[in-house]
Length: 296
Image (tube, rainbow, N blue to C red; front, side, top):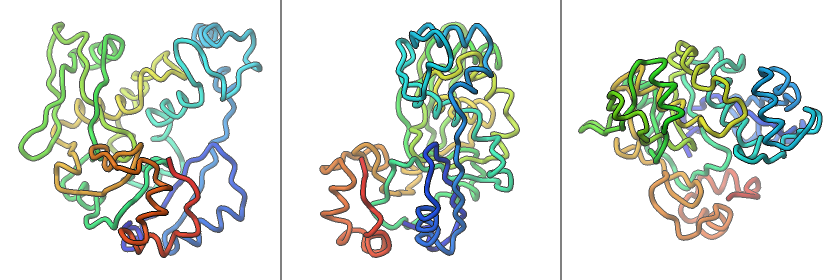
């Protein structure tokens, strides 16, 4: 969509082992950009063993298991749901900022693996975000986060509550804070499929990111989208922008929506690709036509 013009490095985090020939194929497709694949392969047993006794015992109880060796990533538990899905939320809230493969970078454009381009990007969201000194640039905002559990953590760390999120005339997002009247409030959060992140900012605020997770390890609540939203809005006021509302239109498809806002008639990317990519996205089609095999 645009990296053939700027050749930004690409770093992929995957829990699935990729064969060397697959990695070579990907390197050839994105060349001359540098491609790095990080195999995130920790076991659920190692993660459980790193927890406090109370948290580990809670997870064993809700997962209906007696021992940690009985728990696998595909385990689904009452109250908290899928462990593998919960782990990616925890990883993206806290652990991503500490990855050695990202140490040399100041900025990151996060793109989910089920987020797909449908046209050439006329504007560079990375350049836009850097020029405007953003800590966070978002493809879409969605509702809602917050609630009493997260509000209690916000109150403990910031001595206030996050009541709501408002948009100003420059498409900047701001936190509206308050007192006890907001202790149960819910608020808009970023849509996590695509966002620009100032890595230096998030690395420098690990105290909040750590407290955000707290004892709630391997849980979908709190959520990575809440983590990034609260950090940016409360610690860097005025430095978060919505791309689309800033006239940065990327037209990426995720869960049947373009940029999280416009419903696509063909809500499966593979169907769209087969019918319309050659006509509407010829540069992408010519380069990637032999590599597109799936797309939700």
